[in-house]
Length: 130
Image (tube, rainbow, N blue to C red; front, side, top):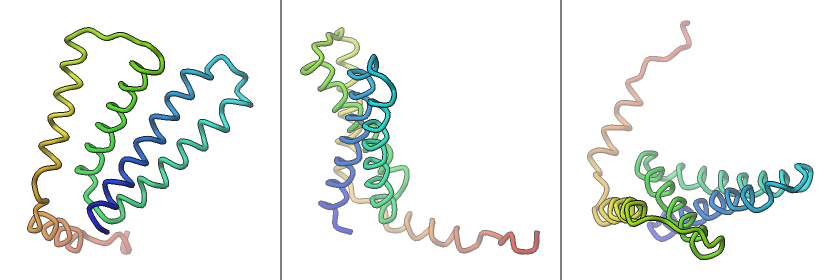
């Protein structure tokens, strides 16, 4: 899977999870029979994209990026759409998360590390005899 596709699917997944959080906030007072289908649809789409990304990449790497993207998107929606206000300390915390995402995104993943993971999984004992 190409890097562009991985990033696109990760961003899409983060977007759908953020949209589900937004829907819960905005439609929280609505009857559950109306709000739950929308929330489940958004969570399902986010989960599907996440599964597709995780098939081709490392769990820890993708999860950190996806959760960070979701947090940044949610923060942006909260500020712009919902008009919420935050302190300088809270904004600094979001900036630290953004810095961590940049650090993760600028390096090449370790090929040796991926090979070690594959080797370790092949050496795991089977549970057939249990």
